[in-house]
Length: 293
Image 1 (cartoon, rainbow, N blue to C red):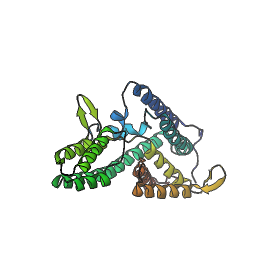
Image 2: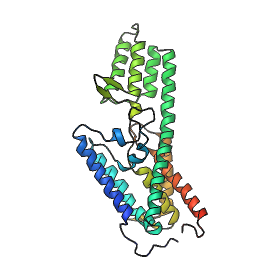
Image 3: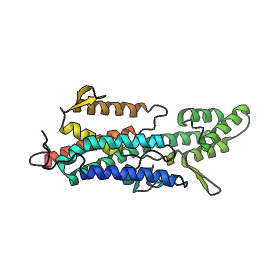
Image 4: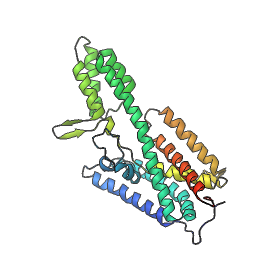
């Protein structure tokens, strides 16, 4: 069993400051967003072929949540992560101390980002291969097949609507050769398009934000260290922590593989945070004479 350090706090310093920083950043996202600046373009995690990709985003994305143009999403995303950090991170920090807990939190977040980018890279590589195949034979049937298999419907995206416009024109007049136009439109849809000084982001420019990878690492560590602690589902049903963690892991793995339409949650980042947490806990336990308990 873990034992608390003398002077254990309900809201220890690292957890408290992480909550404060994440809240301030979410507020800053909203404020600067009103001036047409999306902080996610600079600090959200991006695919390495993105127009917006920078190395520091592997760290900075952990302190951002939601989107400046969707307040409800931002509040729910921020609250769920910070509440879990408060509930479970406080226990860990009181046992480990601030330095060790912060190290654990950051490493889990970085590991989750690396795993997420690996999955994203694989998915985007598949799309690029499909695009390459289409370019070898840019017919109407192949164009419709590419749109059906590789393109996510988004009427608010002008680059998506460009694809649909070409599809409609080509279907109405199959004898018309729109091969070059279709290739250019797909390229714009994937990699973005700069028109008269205005940049329209492509699929490869989508940003990932949130502390969920690090928080899922914290959740796993709590279940690993306090496996028989009772958590109350809906404040009524008592369930041991180890079963909650296992259920979360199975759900995230299933959701990540299924990747249902409209689901933009980085499930494999959550799995990555848990996996890194497990590896780190094993290393610490092996290297410590008296273990982590």
